[in-house]
Length: 289
Length: 289
Image (tube, rainbow over the protein chains, first blue to last red):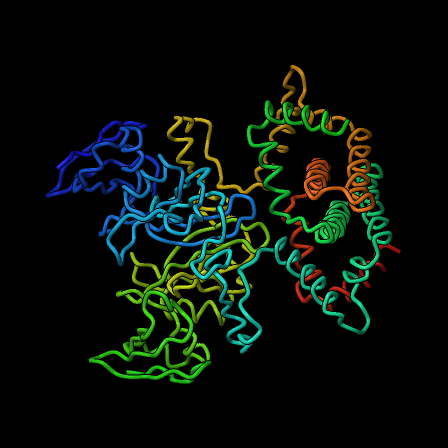
């Protein structure tokens, strides 16, 4: 049996009680259990190969009685919650080293890396612990649909729709505002393609008329600038920005560009802040010339 | 002891085994456990007041051996994962009826509504179940900071920062792309306010020069329109949209408007799709006149 590492990132007192080691707490859950953190010494053989720094970090996590913590995979660009599983020490250590979201399967009692059969890996950019150190976010970029059903995320059953008995309308992803708007615009586009009659909505009019759409984008951008130039109110600036975003998203829909692709680009340009920003701007400028 | 409702949203076979009722499954977890769903008949007194439709819905959830499921609260506008707790039948039923995110505290063995002491409620707009029906998203709008430490979310400890021993730099929220960019711009603004010397970055130049910033916003909006007018590539459209977003976000930073406020406005305008869209557009137009 391997002893857990005591290379702590910050000083901590280690003491033994029964079959377990207890560590003094220095960051997590100060309110609820101020003095001790649990660290099992019942490690697997594979643990011995884990970097001592990673070991110390894993000691921070408040594993449950089965050695597990909740692990949530989130899309770094869209914020969509892709799936939720459980992770043990080895799963988190593997995720850190491979940067592929890895979980512990409670039903199969084994480690599993999302994508190992489907090839739809979740490429992890960072891992976050919550204030209690018993919940983990794998913040990353999925290679493809996360759900085994082929949908983008595992969350496509709306309780409120079920209660309204709207299940027949089909599944609805748990979309946040920007993506719900993108989905609405996409729906209008599909309705137009189906030749739906009647008075077209504003979105449909924009989708049908490139000149109107471009005139609106230029107009709204101009109005956004005026909020700064004329020292208009904050609420006016927010409203004009909402208009810019909406009209620009109708254009993206026409061009078949997903807002996720735009955010992916923004992240790559700005992920390293200053230096990256200037370097990428340089190459972007030369791309413009 | 109250018997669970058998008013199902879709037909289901109910059978008893020992002290429990089992229901035939019709939607969840088809791959892993195709035939039965567990529904405990050991209900609390308070359960008897639950709407039969809600009862049926709660029967869909694959509660664990302690009658719990993972519940994740997510900001409907930003996508930020606010916190993660556990919910039992009563917690979900209470969330449905009150539309305030409610959990089951495992340490205190009691129901608790987030905000009941802090007043920082999470106003739930919809609830989603995952494909296995054992994980729940409370998609909603927080009244204030969610974490008891006063931070916006409970996830502010970056594992990769810890491994790089960058803890001293302070906590970093688990930000997705748009909010990471907003945070970078905000940081540049703070550096300017501190009178930092040296060659200013592009963001700083924009922050210092309203004429340059507005000229860039108008120029980038124009270039975005040109991608449609001149039938340019999808990648060009994505790139121009990234430019529009970035420059417009610098303006928002100058106006002290959060992108969350813009999304909040967009959601209110478009949440009811067509009808709302036209109605709100009407009132928005009159606001412009």
